Image (cartoon, rainbow, N blue to C red; front, side, top):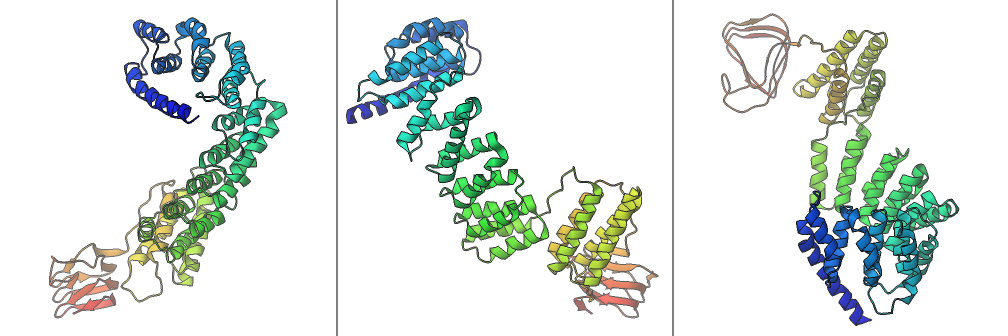
Length: 487
């Protein structure tokens, strides 16, 4: 038996080499008549590797002209090669496929022990696969026999035929389904588990959901846990959030923890999800995984809502988001949060009444206020929006604005600069805010600070804001002044 196995391995290596050599000249383009003749003549070769690759190419290119020679040479082939010849007959539409393949099954018990493909039952299953291709399910019982005989090991070919049985053989459908469920649940090997689960999903859809959840939580194979999780999400599983949360904490494979964290952010992506991922990051022990999750949090942008959602639904969602970010202290003042919520409720009323321009104006004003208070780290009021709060409120407002008429608002600043600003000597500002956005670095317009108020300048504004401010001789400022450094 050892000699036979060694010989089989040598033959397989030889076949692979022949595949690279013989098939190199027969790519996926249509074969010429001379190439077809060459391949058909190769079926008479004394080299088993040449015959194997010739039958493969003839089958793939559906060379029906080869059928007479394939049928004539069928019983002259080595036992294992007969299965490829039978498969070729099925693919090429031979009317003799059924009789020949049943005869092949009848001969399976007469293959001498020690030869390559010497397992009679396994050979009958391979022949059954050929019969299934022509709609003959009369030998389906061999599939169950080999699965029972080899359990808990799963025969690859037999397992692949369970789906066909479940679909085509009413009397055996439930039995095939139950075996697929058993393989998917128990996970005898990695491939059979996930393939069985995928087929159950295809055949029985929602009935497979609970098995998918089980595999996601309990499979011993990390990749199957992750793939099953993707299947569960596709179902729209009502408890998907809690499942993802628990998998993020319990998943032992660090790479999948990163993937799960990213899935929570991109597929769910509301404030509680962001907060949960950041919270669990504290317990992440692997430096690379921690860095990657931190990076996902850093670049996070709330996912775009489905185009099927109405504007009213989006506005209601934004109200819910305001409440969530307030509960997380990402908007620091309750009165301010209520003002934000009221402004979106007003926008909702306008849009519901058909006034999209007014609705867009209100949403745009909401967005500008959020943006201003997020960037306004220099004032001393209680209206504070953190980076996290800004991301959720600003982008969700933008997704709504993208579906409304474009509007423009008067900017609240009379004079505004991104990097530096210099009000020159004897200037006068009668109203409006003055501000410099950045805490920058040289060069500046004047005095090496972001904002310079020139000699004799008069400012009558609500507020003056900059990181560093220099007020020169004789200048008069009637406004709230917000700064980190003042000269």
